[in-house]
Length: 97
Image 1 (spheres, rainbow, N blue to C red):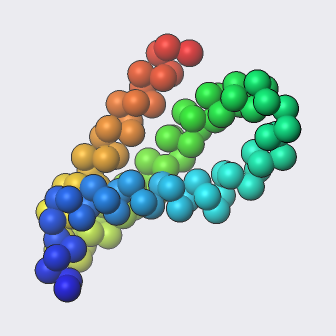
Image 2 (cartoon, rainbow, N blue to C red; image 1 turned 90 degrees about the horizontal axis):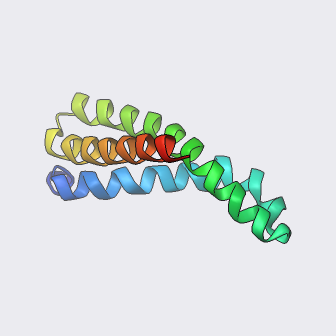
């Protein structure tokens, strides 16, 4: 069972799940109150996306180092791939808006 976690695909999946859990518990409760505003809510989500991505890079980086210390280098590669993609998206959004 533990050997199955040390794959790049498992690292990618874990790297996607950790930010979603982070978002659900820490960021989503703060913006739920704006749902009734419709268009303003959509604009708020667009403005919150860079904040969300930047705050989710840290848990992925922490997860990356934990996987490296646990000698799960293939899973760490998957988390690093997702962290790199999130960072690239953050940079693109920052330049556009």
